[in-house]
Amino acid sequence: MVVEALIKIVIVLLTVLTAVSYLVLLERWISAWLQDRIGPNRTGPLGLFQPLADVLKLLLKEDIEPSQSEKWIHWLAPVISITVAFSVLAIIPFGSAIILSGKSYSLAIASNVNIGVLYIIALTSVGVYGITLAGWSSGSKYSLLGGLRSSAQMISYELTLGLGLVSVVMLCGTLDLGGIIQSQIAGGWNIIRAPLGFMLFLISSFAETNRQPFDLPEAEPELVGGYHTEYSSMKFALFFLAEYANMITASAVMSVLFLGGWHVPFLNTLGMDPSLLAVLGILAFGLKIFAFIFFFMWVRWSIPRFRYDQLMNLGWKVLLPLGIINIVITALEKTYLLH
Amino acid sequence: MFDIIFYIFGAITVGGALVTAFARNIVYAAFSLLFTFFGIAGLYIMANADFLAVTQLLVYVGGILILLIFGVMLTSRIGTVDIRVGTGSRWVAGIMALGLFAILCAAFFGTAATHTEKSADGKSQVVTSWATHATRPWSGSKWNQDATTEALKPKYGAPDEVKSNEGSSGTSVEIGTLFLTDYLLPFEVISVLILVSLLGATMIARKEPTKEEEAIAESVSV
Image 1 (cartoon, chains in turn brown, green):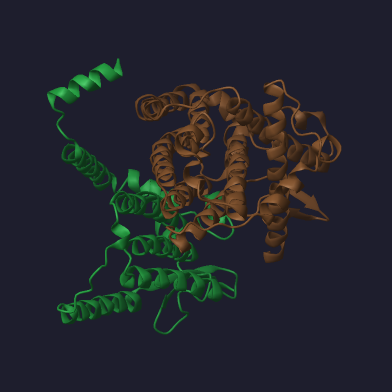
Image 2 (cartoon, chains in turn brown, yellow; image 1 turned 45 degrees about the vertical axis):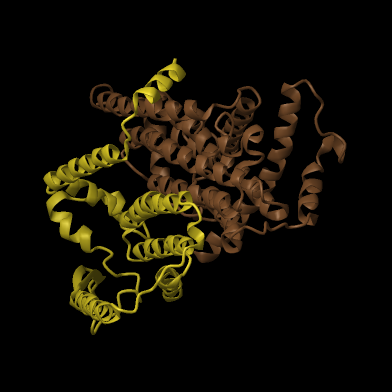
């Protein structure tokens, strides 16, 4: 039991860490493609060794500690960020249970978490601390402003995120991620059953991951580098890692909640071997995550950053009322359309 | 294994609380509360109160503490303020601490931990054990596992699939059912109370804009 969990943790961590380093390369490729440039192509074949070079560079850099900083908290902030980013992965079901030599293995590190959805919200709220404390402990104006912005932004959009989730919970009647997927297999994907909820969740995911157009905590022209201005070397790399890991987690969560996780429609009617089905399920889940990540990057290089008051107006005056309306719509839908 | 994890969470909780109580720097005091809340959430999970644990994280860590830290961060040069630990009220504090300890002890030794056990003939029966002479609550995974479920079962019939989940016995179903049946009135009253305090806080925090400011605000928003 413990060994099984440990093996799963190692596999997930290694996969995600590798994926993160290559996501950085992918982001640079996509930005180059969107801007009609070539992008990194010198390090290794097609530039594939670029992540290795980047990591090496970051490792060898000097770790500068600002003289005005609160040492402990300055050190702890990136650790909090990265821990939270990875913790959500613990409850994501990466595929349907596979059967090896008569024993069934579930493809989630912790399966059957009754409060899965709440666990996600709780961890999102802890995620604010990494950025806020990083901004405060650096002892720099730019960092502090970035930290303050981030906490205000993340607290505001957490509400919309939660309201988007409520529609999923109402439709599926469970807080367990595995149960949510089962409910979608039976009754159709949630993106169809709750399109408004999906939209709200998607928009607030951008804000929660601090990605453009909501990357105000690190807006370069105004704040130099925002909350991580005073960070260097591996501590900076941890923030970088956390941003991309957050993107993966957000994509995985959205795939599970709205796109049926590892479910592929009509595939089980073809009468294929169950183990082949399981593998295809995992691949489908990976593809869905990739599609979301591509969307994240596409938006980043296409849409300009919001102004701070626009961000707050959108969050509180548009998205929040929409979220509440969405709950009413979902309730009506559940009562009258889906009996 | 279970014991070790319990003591780790216990150490995190108590350690965080000690730093909060004794830290001279108010920022560290506020920050170490994070560890206390986190440790308590862990202890709740070990007692199979998963819903309570997540609520603890959501409300205290995600809400109250972030407001606290916000306040500390926005107060300029608060890091340099020395918190004076007064010596005058030491006796009162000591007596109060002892009293609280006595109350907690009474609660601890007076609480029955019920759990189901398979008897020899295969039938399950509810066993009530007292912390004083039976298993310590944290030393087995059985503590309170089915207490709530068993108590509610005849009334509402908790769904079987929730109960059969390994590890945790989903408490969220029972809590939700109770909120919307037996405790509907308190639930609604509390939500109204929270709404009132929210409005009150907004009223206090809101500054009446002067005429000049109003004019500026209008010209900006257009």
